[in-house]
Length: 285
Image 1 (cartoon, one colour):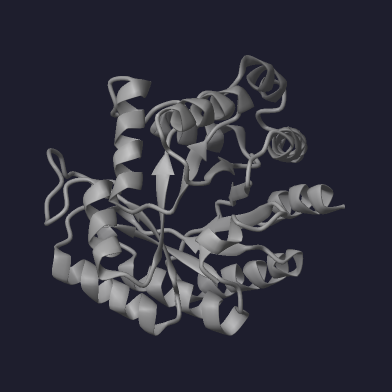
Image 2 (cartoon, one colour):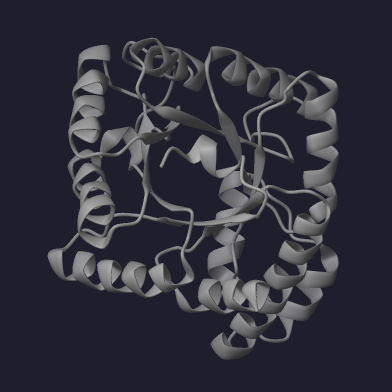
């Protein structure tokens, strides 16, 4: 199923994001976890794409396996950084041949050590989105940033770039992770006022490690509310307590977001299924 059709349903859609492990043993463990989460009947799962296309082969292989062997609709991430049109077209052909109909089109991170403007035929995500849309055959998702992209000078500037992605052909938007629902609802209100009408799906991350979430939020520019930070501080070295707090916080966020009209929840799993599973089962129960 095309993801854009998922968000036309009257019930909320739950989806999960994974990244391709580096080893075959890691892939087997991942497939087992995804099959386990499949019992929750997710709308789809997404597979990330490494900096500069570094996991291109693994992304296509993983998406193909989930789509065809596990039987869950899959969305493959695709970045344009450092790649030319012929390379991107080849990847799209591989995905189409595998039955994958959904793509999350991103600019992507630069390979380690690379600085300066994006190399290749595409400079921005909107360029990649336009290219995919002209080819046809895919439902296209794009990223958005409720607190503003870390490289944007202002939230207004970032919103203008988001609108350009939609105008280029994005069918829906998935947000960067956030921990304060107010920033999501404010972003949706501003997006609607600017004319953006596509579904805006909140992306949540049930946290399991304090240091890991601190590194992640620093990298992407997301903030951690003081109330959450204060609760976590006393359990920095207690993994079980951290997971319990993370599950409770994500569950509270999810319930409030769905009650406020969010079309579903996209969970950033970091390839860990337990916390996401607990949250989803609680929402469905």
